[in-house]
Amino acid sequence: MLAKLYVYNAQKILIGKVERKPDGYAFRYAKSYLDRSDALSLNPIHLPLIDKVFFSKFLDRDENFSGILSVFGDALPGGWGKAVLNAQARRKLTTLEFLLENQQDRVGYLVFSQFMKFPNIEHSKIREPFQWEEILMAKEQFERNNQMNPLFSELFKQGASQGGARPKLSVVKDDQLYLAKLPSIQDYENKAQIEHGTLALAKSIGIHVAESLIMPVGINQDIFLTKRFDYSGIGKLPFLSMKSILAVDHNNDASYGNFALEIKRLNGGKDSVEIYRRMVFNAMVSNHDDHYLNHGLIWKEGEWRLSPAYDVVAGEGFRRTLAINAGLKGTSPCRDNLLSEANKFSLSMSEAKDIIDEMALSIHNNWQNVFKENQVDDDVVQSIKWAILHDFS
Image (cartoon, rainbow, N blue to C red; front, side, top):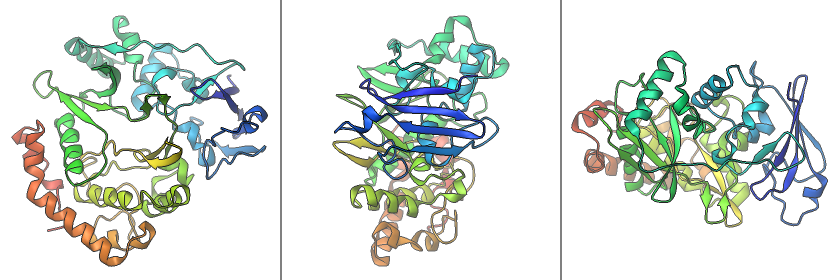
């Protein structure tokens, strides 16, 4: 069984080594990395640049990363990617083996190698024109039978390193890298339209969101594309999820307020109000998929900053509670709870109330028009009404 991996960054510099132990994982920075003046901590809160062995226990039976080593978990594929990679390997891959797969398009800038040598990485991309009809047929065959059409095996590997449970591919459109989310046979609503409309609504009230678009393919078969924000003109950017920043292993141990406090330690509170607005927005659109992997930081222009909002979907999870804690009343999306820890976001009670009132009014007046102006069908708008401002009338 694979027992250790060398960790590199996208600039081919050795960062350190992660090893599998009987009950968890150990990581240690390379001394050559610690000696560099430009060394960047993998996690400035929990993995400082010191010569020390950092250890965390296995998260579960699948030996996923936990606690202070969650940064490596950020690099793992989600449910869809693991299913694709296991099918291609014709066996269940281990956690460390997953880290060696499809490294060119995973989130963040980490690269893993079995040897003390930067690995050869494929840079093949899916480019226009996209054969969506054939792709969707192959995807449906895999979803139904767990059998991969050999003609599409390598194609579906593109995007397999991404997180999340939905079918997805990495594609290049107009010379820009996008993540394409495909409809699933388990869908009973147009997820692509809802996600695109929700991001457009968030953008309309001043929230910084990932760029997105939808590509109609057939009846209720739209493809959702979101532009990758962890790439820049100089290459891939370091990324840390909320899970990594908080070093927690369960969503009920995570909170928006504590996330804001930790980020304040890193950038002086530049993102405090933005985090608060995202929390309020998720509550106002009943997004139950706001878990700790759907929030993150990117290293950009010499500091850690909140990434653009992503995976924000009105009515996702078909619950009105949030996935992570919003205040003293836990995951409740009610107004009182959203106000209960305003101080953690460097807001006075009056300022927090004003934000909620302003956002509620704007969403109430504009949400249906924003959705329709962004290619969301009337029947989809009607289907999502239940999720919008349910507790803010």
